[in-house]
Length: 337
Image 1 (cartoon, rainbow, N blue to C red):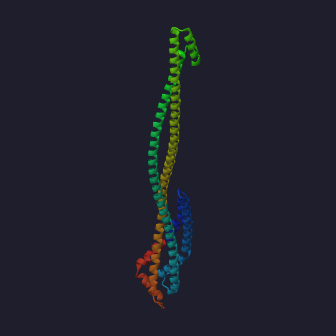
Image 2 (image 1 turned 90 degrees about the vertical axis):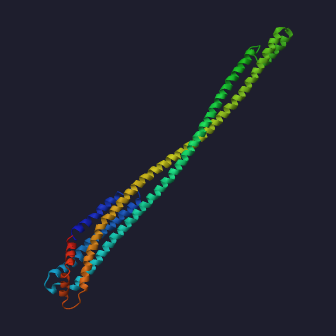
Image 3 (image 1 turned 45 degrees about the vertical axis):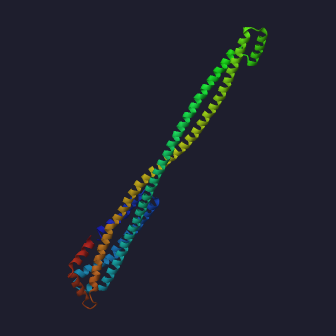
């Protein structure tokens, strides 16, 4: 046992430290894992000390008991004490290994709980994104409708403006004094009255047509201004809704980024669970070894306890061991493993 087990156990801290360094998500768990590896290194050192002291004493005394023909060569009380001390040392080491396993298992549960929480966060974010995407689609529909209305009003305003310009030109065309205003036209009309004749009728008609055209032009300009203002109002409202839609879309993108990050964390947390479980698995064979040696020690203790303290105690103990060759064999296997 003191050979290969000791060497294998000595390699474990470095292996597990390298493994702990690769833990990537929860820095607290990573730091905790590294501290546990330090504890394991101390436990390995304790194991080395036990091999050099308690186990060596037990091995030497048991070897003498199995091989010597001289009772004076074996110190039964010392053997009993060596077995007791060895058992206590092994129990201490085994329990520390199991405690380390327990701490690592708690870290595994923490990782799994974090995975569960992050999956819940992703589910909530998915629902929020779906609802916000519906809101954006509704806003885009309103924006499209407003822009169509604004475009229609703008087209209407342009038509009214063109009609107003045409009406003004018509008024100027029928003005008897060319580019002069209606006041001058009425003055001309009065003069035509004095002159008399057909020119009076022509002048009157020209003034009437010019007046009607100017009135129409004025009304068209008012409607042009009104439609233009309404078009601007629709455009402004569409701009505000577009800003709201852009803000919602930005929020959606942020939530999608959160989902990407959360899913990445979930993958890495699951990988960390595997690594932490590997740390536990590395300790398991050594706990089995500890229990095996402890069983051998307990068997030897049981044998010695069956021996009554008298002058022939050595003979009785030796005979008892010889009658239980499986105990002798198991001890030999333990010390050679």
